[in-house]
Image (cartoon, rainbow, N blue to C red):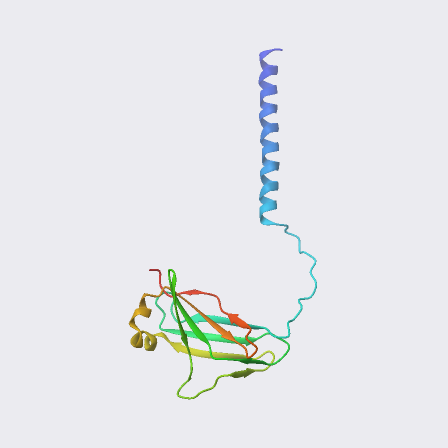
Length: 161
């Protein structure tokens, strides 16, 4: 074998290794991301009793108001009890039940199919009555229906520390 043949074989071997490495790497990436094709799915079964609770903050960090949006996603009417606010910091949780809205008792509340209910909560009022709540970093809301089924919201971040 001459010198030029050995250099040519080395270049072909390096290119072959790079192509095989690229194919293996691209397959593992495709496997990690999942298939890009639309998967066949059946229509989403609607539950008889289902609700979603979403929390909307007034500011991204240190919000003053929280809007609780409760939507009935089920096929039947839903009777919900009063919401419970969960203030979380590390491993401690403080719970507060909202009993009245603007001096009137409205709970339990009946939500028809496909309707929603908005509740505006002022955090400043809670901070004045219980000052240690200002230390809470996260917050969520949970509500129960009259049968005892619990619906919870996502946890939102009130502040970083």
